[in-house]
Image (cartoon, rainbow, N blue to C red):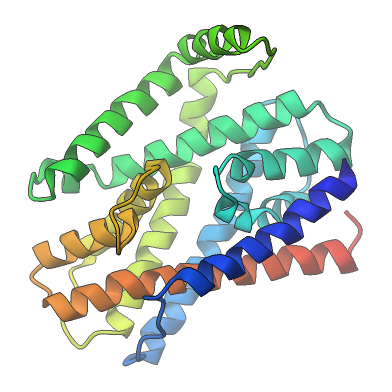
Length: 294
């Protein structure tokens, strides 16, 4: 199992390279303000560190205690698994790492990772709910967002309903798959950390936007990144030519009166900016794993 996990970790890097090769619109933007770009990288990295903290805290709520160092390693080494088709390994990857290294039930770690993902998506959408209420985005985005918020809220408030649905589906497939739940009280205590994670990334995106454009950028833009990223993770089918996240960001930037060319550059370049943070995060985890005892 340990060897399988290592294969998946390094295999995810290959899937990332394939993704980069197939992506035609991934270009390096011209940096016009290096100070703002530096701030964007700082907040980008802080966002990933908050992600590791949320992973550690939510594991603690499942009675699984790990160090912050191990939290970073398990989370960062699996950061590229979202590029593996199906996106399932983005949830199971770090859960498997903790299960293997700490001799803990995969059921428990997978449940923790599942609810962590649900909470991350919910908080990201909630931060951008003002964008949804503006009613100025395409109907597809508005409807998808509203349905996602409703479903995620139901899952977080009434997890037993989801557990029963999963049980019925697995029985119909002649499989036994169980997921542990987490109390609403515990979720409320964890939420501020997820909101902080998104805000760090949102602030970083604001500074990144300032760094690559000569136009004034509204600070309201920092709420667009969490909203668009969460929606992109939820979406299974994206419109041709541009991703859900980039499309939503583009629409919102246009609402803020940025010229089409500038809005397109920011929206498309944000993919490379965030990927840069993922690479730093992965290398950090790899370094900690190879040169420090876990």
